[in-house]
Amino acid sequence: MVAGVAAVGAGVPTVEALAMSVVIFAGASQLAAAELIGRNAPAVVVVVTVLVINVRMVMYSASIAPYFRDQPGRWKALVAYLLTDQAYAVSLLEFESDGETARRWYYLGVAASLWVTWQVATVAGIALGASVPDGWRLEFAVPLVFLAVLVPAVTDRATGAAALVGGSVAVTANGLPFNLGLIVAAVVGIGAGLLVEEVA
Image 1: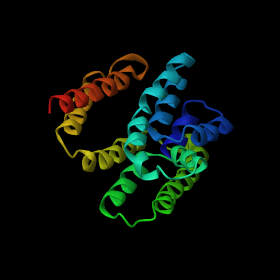
Image 2 (image 1 turned 180 degrees about the horizontal axis):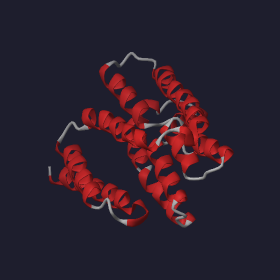
Image 3 (image 1 turned 135 degrees about the vertical axis):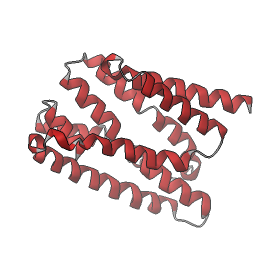
């Protein structure tokens, strides 16, 4: 809902807001894109910001890919499209703890239900649009979701370093224009995690 409200608040037309939800299908990226569009940022800044925010999906893909190695190409494409933080976290925990799980159907059940819920909630947010009072500050919900996914994912020194350094840089660099602080934080956090992993 927050993504839909943010898109309408930034002046994104309804059809484009719905298309953004279907094509990008990533909360943080949609919010960042809506904010940048609302600020009349150059298109290249919007695209680069969305790509950098979503680069974590490459790491998720590399991590979960071995569980889908024997699946047909069209299933892999569907799995890739439906990949989200929540689908990744829930599915990976299940796959690691239960080797007998029907991976294809388990993942599809988790990821497709998230996709449907996301689209319905986005439509509701678009419908609510400007009628939501500014004082409600709905954007706090997005960081809470990421924290709920992040905390169980911090399992070793490398992921801990990435989370700590990335979070610290994000707070410190928050004032940079065009949400560049988020991009810098993502790159520095990933670098810190990789460095700690190599040293260990």
